[in-house]
Amino acid sequence: MDAITVDGLTMTYRVPIREPGLRAALRSIGRRSRRDIAAVADASFSVRPGELVGFIGPNGAGKTTTMKILSGLLRPTAGRIDVLGQTPWDRRTAFLKRIAFVRGSQPVGGSQELTVLDTLDYQRLLYQVDRAEFAATLAELTTLLDLEPLLQRQLRALSLGERMRVGLALSLSYRPEVLFLDEPTLGLDVSAAAAIRTFVRDQVARTGATVLLTSHYMADVEELCPRLILIDQGTVRYDGPLGQLSARLSPYKLIRFAAPEAGAEQFSGLGEVVQEDGDDRWLLRVPRAEVATTTARVLSTIRVTDLAVEDPPLEQVIDRAYREGIG
Image 1 (tube, helix red, strand yellow):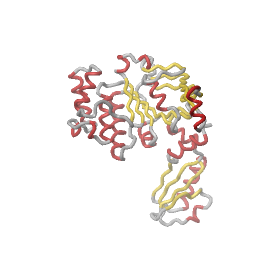
Image 2: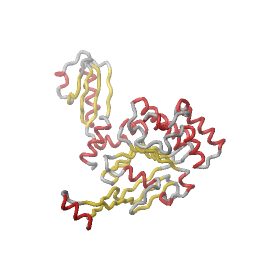
Image 3: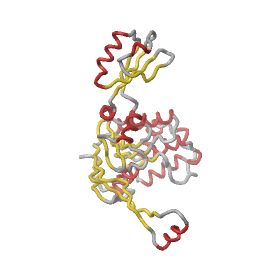
Image 4: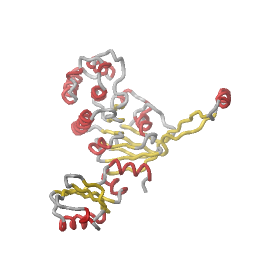
């Protein structure tokens, strides 16, 4: 049985509109015009237990709306949605104890005067977690997320990265089976973002939790998500292995190599030189079908000290998907 099933999900908002100007503003007082906006349009996908899936798309694609529906914060206009065998917007207590929704922009709510430890203890009471079980979980999370220096501090005194770590601890303190992570590394520095990614990956491996993750940072997706769901204008455009998206959208690969004695004239007919630097390192862009023969020609005609064949950066692939669509 899938942990998450989405079939024909549609979410339409009816929003007020009016023309600019004072006259239109006065007219709208007595008669307001409205228009239907589709945030999600007939989206379908499923996620197996223990999967870590990237759920990405441009701003306004419907990612956060979908997350809110799956976690029970919104009721959709149409569609069948099943999370752990439950209809999310029924918001049954037993269901809410099995899921967590973590947003990078709002990782920690509640009174900002409370200490981190008080906030965690309040979470224990709210979710009716056994004291002994909570103590064991807290000890584990304190080690994994390096919370010891934060436990006695008030929430208002935490940095963004510290808030994100505490937000994850709050969400995991009752050991949810499904995690919805919405931009978990938003605004974090490189070290903090790497620490969050490591923690998420290890947590999934340790507990078997199911994770649906949205992020605009492709490093999050590349490091964590073997599978990718790409949504645009409320519709699923791609659902499959991360590596296959690059092969499907990008007609070329990159051959990166070091050749101390090479000159640009030696690359005639081998591919497009897209980069070189002062360390005698070169980058060729080559059609995928010609990678093997081009690599062999480079190695046979140029003295190479290092060579690697790469897909283009994921950011470029995703940008092309947004701009040109996926055939």
